[in-house]
Amino acid sequence: MAKANLAEIAKKKGIKYFQVSFIDLFGVMRAKLVPASAIAGMQKDGAGFAGFAAWLDMTPADSDMFAIPDPDSLIQLPWKPEVAWLAADLYMDGKEVAHAPRNTLKRVLAEAEKQGYYMKHGVECEYFLTTPDGSEISDAADTQEKPCYDISALMRRYDVIREICDAMLSLGWGPYQNDHEDANGQFEMNWDYDHALQTADKQAFFKYMVKTIAENHGLRATFMPKPFTHLTGNGCHMHISVWDKTGKKNLFHDKKGELGISDVGYHFLGGMLNHAQGLCAITNPTVNSYKRINAPRTTSGATWSPSSITYGGNNRTHMIRIPDDDRFELRLADGAANPYLMPAAVMAAGLDGIANKTDPGKRLDIDMYADGHTVKGAKKLPLNLLDALRALEKDKTLASMLGKETVSAFIKLKTGEWNDYASHLTDWERAHTLDC
Image 1 (cartoon, one colour):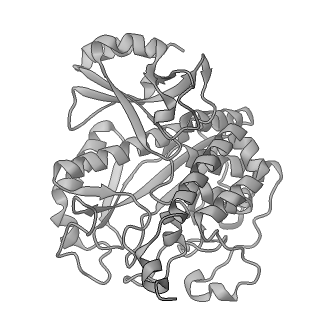
Image 2 (cartoon, one colour; image 1 turned 90 degrees about the horizontal axis):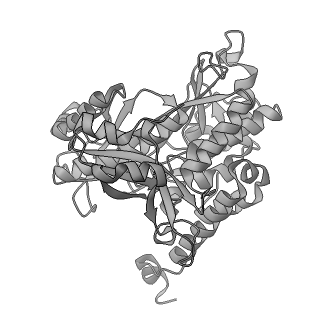
Image 3 (cartoon, rainbow, N blue to C red; image 1 turned 90 degrees about the vertical axis):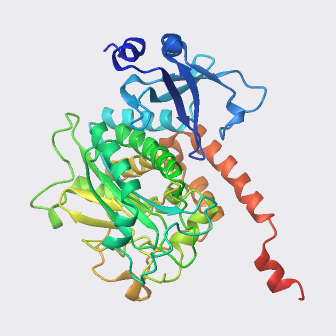
């Protein structure tokens, strides 16, 4: 099937520039700004980058890397329609860059489709609106102990929320609700779920869009997992379903199954639970991530994040909940999760569960925050990034399905990040050990 001609689209839609972009292994968006007059060549040959200049496993001696834009991903910036954004796939020396996150997701999805499975998901991207330096929330009046759904705090940020939601409406994403979240200064915006690649592209763009619009209003938006120790962290709850190859039949749904979930669904769930410790390195990829999932109670009364590898029905205290008879909600992931690696890893874990008919065990219908200590044998999530990276390194099945190049590069770069953190001398260390 022929790809849309970007040069013709530019003339038709009045686009003067294109952002040819990609997401690196650390989830950072990179781009070149390409004039419309040059986009035909870029569509054919790609925009050139030095891979070592981004968080990819490359050296200064490596060849040029080329980002070939995907016309199907095109988004005209709602706040600057003369510019259009494009997700791109990375190539080097005529071959795909195997460990590039978008390439990794496409490879996992292609393998799934060979087996007759088609993944769809939606994300709940939580974020804080802060002062420009990020040191405190932007709304000094947002002080309630339980601020979730507070209408006044929501409407004091109406101009920002409205502009973001209007943008999603104009893009046809189907946004359906916006709310003030559990932490002071925290918000969440929901839009319709889609095929995994489309949702990943939208999530990548959403984060860029929210940050840009907030900045245009003199504020800062952060998706950092735990920017304030006393407040609930930023999750990225992921609603997952698997369909047949037509994309019309939900394979998780079975009205005769327990809670309306099919055997295929429970095997997929078993795979996620079985690989949870290694999966955690992907869904919770920063040092700061582990201050969210292993946090004490916040001022609102709950962290809303898991610490154990368990599942339940419509129960938000577990790592995975079953909110309906057609999907699962993975509550593990946080705002730092890579939009492409996250669904790739979840799909890989689920496929392994289906292949091996992994039994997830019995669900737990208890409040894990209050009664989790009574559960015998429940495995714990990693306590820090290093533990998670070691778990991922040991998970040979997950590594094989994601691609050894991807996992090797991710572990190498993230271990470097951990080492940098571990060598940093903190004020806490001085306060507690200077006089030892």
